[in-house]
Length: 306
Image (cartoon, rainbow, N blue to C red):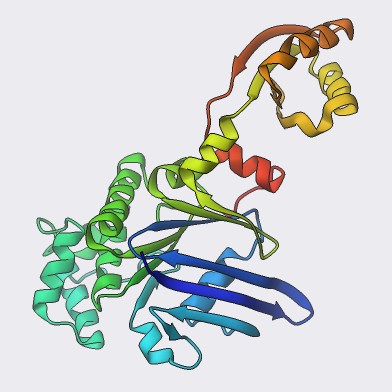
């Protein structure tokens, strides 16, 4: 698969504050690419630069082979995105809203019908926009973004505010668009469970720098390998002992449990040492793999942008 979006050594500052020191990654044709990072990591700034809403200080961004600085019109014809919730005319129908956008971007009525079918809005497209649920509004926004037939669709928090049914609708839609039409999708979200189900690849950044780029399957395999969850009392004594002796093995310390990355052969030794230090073990189990766990390990437990 070819690279549809390529960032090389992108740098961005606001005054003396460096937001993106040196960022490089690529998104392939037909994949859903997740963009994850702790609070203030630079995800939204990066997305705005890709969409031409912010200029970069140095580096390069190419979309479908077109440099956004040297060939801006050609690059923008191949990219589309939704940075915030779709904003359309409430008293017009979904179809009429699409018709207005189609006239602006040169799409015909046949293309309107195609994108309406792609997002599954055929039965409701003639109803007023104000009557739509949040999930339907998001799907219509995606239809609008697809009118000019871009190579890559960029979405910032596409499931924000949606109920579980709406989240599933958007999740299934994005996977279908990528895997069945060849569209590349770059999606930023703070709902890690959803990203795990949507994405093929994820890029984890912190302070504008990439910590890891990997397939979701690989990250989940890494996170689940040799991690055991202890339910112990008193927790303070357990944490104090473990931080003093094997701090690098602590994956997560919560009020009701502590997760350790240890081998199966080490479990009897850890159990004995905890009990010798007055810690009672009430439960011990292997931890299932998840994108959330891997994210927490890689970022050191950072919070994700909401």
